[in-house]
Length: 541
Image (cartoon, rainbow, N blue to C red; front, side):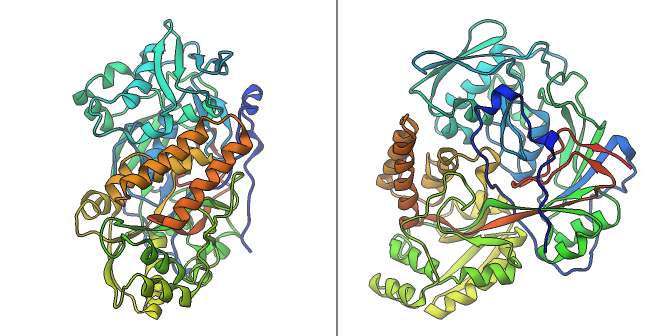
């Protein structure tokens, strides 16, 4: 049996007043590998663990594949780094998912009609370069997302804060938010926007430079980062917030090789690793603490919904019905996952079972293909090089053969998938992992990531304009609904729609497994999201 460790008490208690704003947290993310129980080569950028008590060394499961501008950063490494170097006015604890005041001096204050909020910046807050954090910086950080210089290429975070009409500096330290409509999740949602210096990001050229050399107000600052050498961080000497750094430096090694991560931990080079291979859990738990958490993180299928035959939803549905998810989870994940019965994982507080559930049903799959007039279907299955996807994909391809479908496998890094393969007219089907729960766990946020705006629905899976409009209207109407029951009913309609249409839809939700050395690391817990988080953690031993 694996061992589930609850978050340390010191990690789970945000300031008391903000606890009332919290939305119960649930699972979140990760891509998990499967290797033999023996160790393997160390990660190529691994340190030798000589940092002592003033340093933390770790190995992540992904390599750096994007910049750090928090308006657009969505890669696993960048989002984890940003949690340490940037602050929002309100932040969500990466482990408990509870909100706490970060840059905000006090809780946000709402007007009587719920259309205006004011938030004051923490006294003495400074960026890592020593410049003060002002309300103008706060207003700019939101405005550049809400009203970007290039409206045809909106930042990824824009859809999460579409309820905000404008943000202005009321005075030197107080920001004023004008909302389009009352939004009950205001405090939690503004956590997706990290505050950055206007002086460093005021034009496209400055923003481009900032993307690789970010400056924030968080407890750490970024010293260096690359795909080859990993990430190095050190204490931000100007930080005066609620979660000060307890070590002087951190070195984050990165590798997608599962055996290398295990070797780094067992060899003493690092104190913690993410994405523990499922077959290594039992061999590690005697010496190390192993956290197992159910996650939102999903393995999904995504189709070019504008290209025949995948423009017919019956074909998309057939491929889902033909997958024996229980067998896939048992074989590829060693049981560390759950079949998708909704877009949301079953641990989410707002979980609702979808009207369409893709139980294993070969006869239904064959019947749907026949109804669609599709025979001898053959296509290329593109996949990311994520370790769990690499284990799942071959099993799914074998199962599809039972309904007369042939798929060839093409596995490449995520950057190539979304930068080169998916944009081309020749793209047809993708298997990958995804997890917006690193930004939050409420239904509105999770659904907006994949089903709202243009990036995913329009540019990637090419959903019809009518479907995109219908989904946007559902989510916007739910967001504007003050009655919780009515809002949940609208969310149910949205969940049912994506399950039925399946332009992008999960096969399964994974479990996240993290391992660390309790003799060398204090006040640390694994998160149910991609990445490792060391806010408040320290070395010992």
